[in-house]
Image 1 (spheres, rainbow, N blue to C red):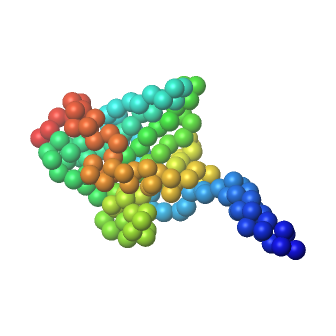
Image 2 (cartoon, rainbow, N blue to C red; image 1 turned 90 degrees about the vertical axis):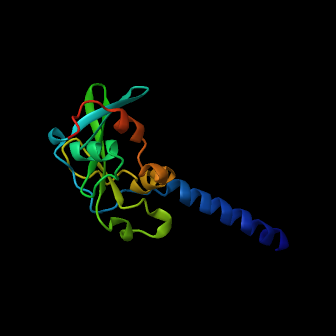
Length: 160
């Protein structure tokens, strides 16, 4: 009996590991919307092996960053993920006033929310948006953006 009792913690740990391996975190509904991509400015491209990512945002966001101002509420950033020359998926981060309040402090990324979309523009609920928040949270000093320097250096938009 004592031998069996010693194994309970090990069995419990194994069961927990199996449960976690099988556990999948999917997207969650939020306020992020799919922007009209044709209305966004393609300001940088990132290549990761066979993946090409075109990153776009609004002219107003680029101008704000170039003028040393924060990215305005209502801004979309879209990362269009191409594989084999075709759109595979679209990652969107959108900023809205007070949107950070939708999350606990440990998940908050300013007022940004994130969503994955399929090429047809529908939400891809199989993607993990919490992972996006986790990764972007490390960029708080750059308005949660990985391409802030690319925005500052972009010369395709005339500043008024």
